[in-house]
Length: 263
Image (tube, rainbow, N blue to C red):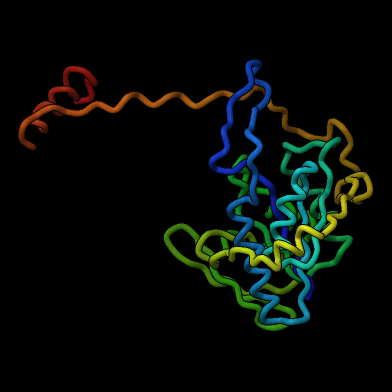
């Protein structure tokens, strides 16, 4: 069984991010990590391999050269091999373009199960997984919280839908997007870290990949970033004065009526 995991390297949640003076780019502190939801995909692939000893885990990302560090993290966790599709000279903001490269890679390598996070925490598109499955012409289930391989040809999954849970049986090959609750990603052991340090990550030229809609040459993206804007600052917190809860409640109502004018 061949398992493919798509990941993305994103800015660490503690990294300092500011909008450039011309509002055309983001200045991001050099702190990056594997996307939060993708960690569940990697962990689930490892759990499948622990049950099916013949399974092989391949991890792939479309991104800049620095993304090799994220790939090495997955090797340290337990993945068998990893590939970087270099985004240096191609479109990186259009999820359809990204999905085309990932689908082309998957079609070339032939996989039974494809896993990826439900969304990336930087752009929050939540569309690359579904688009990739559609381009490959295979079934997919999003927001999976439980996954069991029935046999070599099918998988039973539990996913979240609005106000309920859904259980599906899906024929392979198929793609599943993962989310919190599926598992608890492991912390790499020192032996895994040492293995990752020695691992050479092959870099793939996007031009060598046959995408489902043809070569994604310059200008293929249908998305153009016009500007970046910082979120509005939150107003300062105001403490309602009063000696007793009753006085505080009266002062709050008075402020809502006379100042905020919402009552």
